[in-house]
Amino acid sequence: MHKLLTALLLSLLAVFSVQAEDTPIKAEKQIVLKVNEMTCQLCAYLVNKELRNIDGVISTKASIKDRTVTVLEESKVTDEQLINAIHKLNYTAEVVK
Image (tube, rainbow, N blue to C red):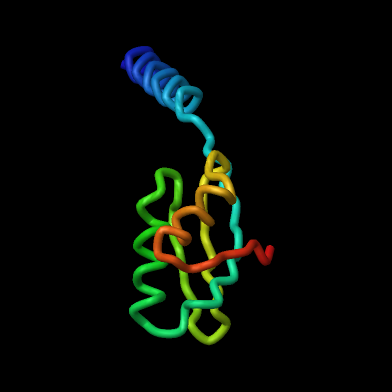
């Protein structure tokens, strides 16, 4: 019985270690964009919505007070993609940090 439990435990460990190796690690980065035209709640909603449509954007948080949007994204997303998405709304954007 002890040998059977040991064999079962080892096989489970082998399966989990293979799954862990196959799971790609996605690097994340955070960027802050200044959007001067973002002056109301609707503006913030539209900016968040447009940015979240980009594949690789994990989350966004707009601040009307600061006129900025903080974007958490995968490393494959470029600053140009974010800026172009905001330009679709006829707003301007620049990278703050």
